[in-house]
Image (tube, rainbow over all chains, first blue to last red; front, side, top):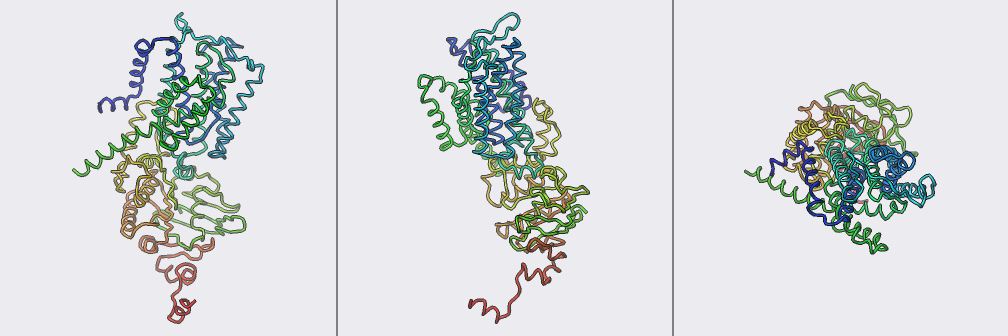
Length: 329
Length: 265
């Protein structure tokens, strides 16, 4: 098992190919109806957003509550490109990622001067402004929403049902996770953490604090934008400004916080659990915000590092024991 | 000269924290800076390392380059490392990650390499990690590499801060009270490690310290600050006998009569 781990660590790509094959088989083994496939696609999309949010919030320590706005930018880039240019997912996805990245730059600028709750307020305003701008713009079909956004067709096979669309969303998710792993396990990820822990001391070590804040915001905005585009094309291909409210933002935050801030796997596990809980509590619509708000508060109070913290603790304790054990021999 | 300041000035409102300090430091020297609390020692460090912006008219030169208005990360890149009085450790990162982030400027691969996650990165990361583990075992923290920095004891934290500052292979290391709050045994241990590190990496050191034994034993020259001004500079023995220094910092010797009066009040 250790040898296997070592190989995966050296060739991370191999691990993702294995994960890809396993996830390809999941629907035919476990899923019994279309709705489960739809939920699985949603989970994939949320994992992309959570992975991105983890970069900026968990690793770089910048509180952003405007991410849902960038997610909306991704969705509406895809929607408008379909509406006015008739483009499909293969064009709208890169375009959404690019444009969301530009919005990431805009969101990063306040973080140079603001911190903590003040930054949260600024980004909350930014996110809401984007939503209201869309809701009141005829160009974006205002409150009618954009419908009939088409699903991609590969080799003549349309991926237009939820069970087929899963095979589009899942690889995109794996690529996103791969990128987030590569970045966060490298010196850039360490620099993000250093900026989170202590910007002054990070600067003294030669880390450009502003540049890394900018990088974190842009990267995570690109993740959110890509997720937004994949969401726009999700069957039945309908987007509406109401899909991008503060409730969604709280859900995204709950995923990252519950899963474990600054823990890559934690964010992913959080996204899976919270998406399922979100779906189960749909009948209790009025209480959803309350439920997820309470989840965040309880998580911060009783397990500040979320699920990922437990995983970490287990591994670190074990490693420390073996280390000292070896030393005493 | 490795470090040179001319007419260095910094005022906070009406308070002149640093007032026209000329300072010169040749390479390979160990320089001590002493002075009473509030005399501007830490402000001096903050000005040189770019944390504060000096007032107009000041000039700072490091290794032949003008760094007067450079931001702190640029100064760090040029090879000037420092520690902080309040340590400023990365509490929620593992010990090894703390040290490895000190290596940041020397990392050989680019950002694009990092994003694509090619195999060569992992090999290079491995070499970096091995090198940093060596540094950790040098200061005696190798066994704690995977623990969080917040789980270390006070003395170990001081060592970790030292290791993090040295990880980037600096030319000049500025230590802000490296031995504050340590027991005498630990102070000796720290100074021993420091001297070994200096030899190994060819460091030039500036040390702010209130434990005079440390300054007198290790420093070849001492600069004394008081109210933001340089009042004396010389070898430790010269400083010990300097009247201005005695009055401002060391405290003068009282005879029996004076002592009786002072105690009665």
